[in-house]
Length: 443
Length: 83
Image 1 (cartoon, rainbow over the protein chains, first blue to last red):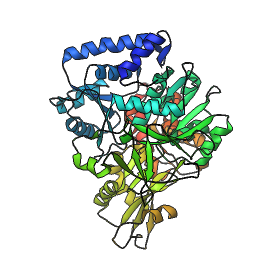
Image 2: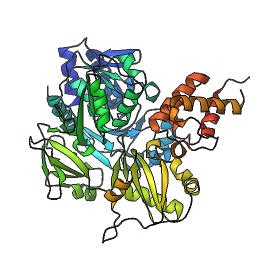
Image 3: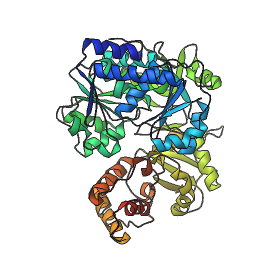
Image 4: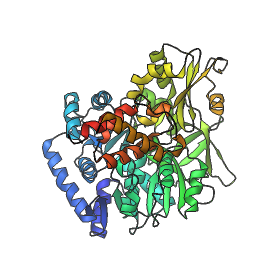
């Protein structure tokens, strides 16, 4: 069923299946009727407080889910923050997105409170997600509960769930893939959403909740398979947010699990194409979306129901990528003879990591250059992990020692896995740009 | 438990989780990401096993601050019951 608002979705299932389980988290469980009641009660309290923009330090808990639905119902703008990001960066983001109230870990809320602002006047329905990476250059993407509901419906047309399903939500709700494909996809189909209990329980969440479906980033899929941590009831895995080795998909398929691969961006409220049969990398376009290719193969998306409103306070950046309703992705693709989309590479100076986060290379490399006082370097991927290619004299140990303070500031997945020292200059184009494709092939 | 004993147990857990690393020289100052084959998920696995082994709980928000094996040992030592 297609919903326009979160409130409509919750109210519908509270009436249609009041006693059906909606949310589980550890030993706690709420039916749809209880969820809707909890959301309405909390929304009343939030209205009374009079705040306008809530920063959610998303921990994926049941209370977190209630809070964000309630804040939306209360007409507040929501900003999804990564609670594991460095506090200094979070303070900047709080100020940048006009947050006047915070929800999350008490100590962190206290630390960030001095950065609170006066709020917003026009935040109703808006939900801001940061483009994954959450680096200083990360932009806040303005989505709405309407666009997110449409995205969930769009995906469910290709991969429907039923009210008897349990969807395990292991991904962070602060990322749009986790929010839509870990939470909304299930709720909009009337399925139960089991909220993952954090990284500590990656290894036993499947055996604890016994889900029938789960959305994963490639890194997590690899982990679950390697640790044999999937349950026999699991029949569907949706993989997205990063490049996935075919061997992983085949390994999951060998267990009798249907594996689909999805392609989408934060800017399109998550998936626009999903594989549903045969080759897992051959993706069918979702019903609301139109995808074409530019002359150079760049994937262009029209997603009238799911497209972002723009980057928050960044009309310049919005205009660069969203022109006449067409989003220029920076990804390269091709269509097969059946019209299915295949991703072939990236045009942007960006690495997509298997945990779904992105490294914006110019910014990342500039920070490395500053720390090392050396400009002839570039970053590429080796075994899906960031590797520094350093052209010049020096030892790996010396270089890494100089970079240690910088590495401390980065999420673990974005830290360098090593340094390759080369004597020859880096391969460059006639205009001086690094030939990243060439580096990647060597890596 | 002494710090040296904690480090030794960390080594055992690492080699248990990553048999390919057996025999590798892991010292206090070994940087987890760059000097080992341990990726971010491998790190989660090791921390969970260490928490169970030492019966301690290191808050997830602290995990990203643990860069070296010595940092991991410090985090465990800090939470061990006092003798």
